[in-house]
Length: 428
Image (cartoon, rainbow, N blue to C red; front, side):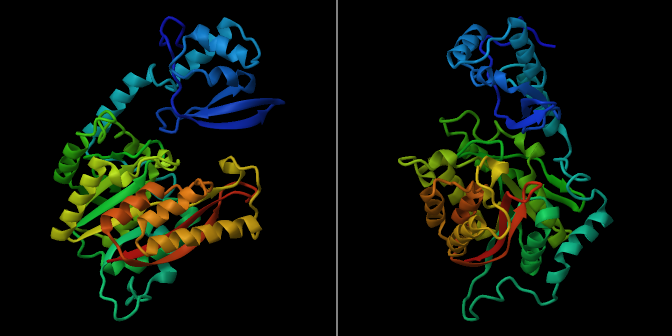
């Protein structure tokens, strides 16, 4: 275990998953690593919370103690705090501790592998090909019709082509019906696509940031080759962004365990079968910092704007489809709200109205109205797909669309929290 002689002088906690539980008559915080470098959890007594919140990279251990005591924290022995910090370091939860070397090793292993391993095969969906096909077909079966077309519900005199789709990224068990509906609806439109650009939510990334990888995304159903030449072109653009270090690849390891692109790519592989198409997987960091009054507009980010113009130019030369792997609202006690959201409640109906407004903006191709609507309520419903949907609307330059498959998926045992999802086929 780490001790005070091997800990960083000013330890800093990484972003963590934190939950509070009661265990054997006492209250604890449960700390987990969202990057899953460690699969273990750490139980920390709640009275140490004031110490934890001061492990911010600016304070020595002595200053952490002083700051915690000034907040009224219960005094603890030096051995207790040293043991806590040591456990945090051993579990790779300090950003400036053992985590640094471990992350370097994991990134090297990820890049040296022949492809990006599917992180959820055998966990969130079957790992065997026949089992997976049967599992997905079960969701898609109600929507399997030979002459199905994504634009059946559009006016007959509207001359448009499919440019983009919105796909959920929730697990299939809860969202399978929505996945089946949207992917089966567009399946016939995908067969001659040459490039799939998939924007996914980076649940562990800040933004505005686009994170690339050269690895192919493999699923049990196949493997689409990542367009590494296009990755190189985009990386050269993003390298000129001096506001963040190594814009394109600093967070590349997030691709290893991020589920958003993986779950969409499973359905993509099912839809197109064997194909010579290429894929461009892009993780989008959170737009949370852009929602405050006076925050810069992402459209004004010079490098991201240049990337979008490049993708639009590519789409003129190669048949390209943009995909947003994105969920909508996250509401209820499971996400920190105090209000319960049981089925058929007024709260759920209010969220659905807000979601329908967002979907209306999406199907009209208005990324600015979409973003402004989220900003207007200060993102109180935590729109998880904000960044990838915005980037998709921007890059695809769509003008109309159809949304379907709206669901509010259970997110806690009592069904008082939910995640809302929907699909959309977008045209231009």
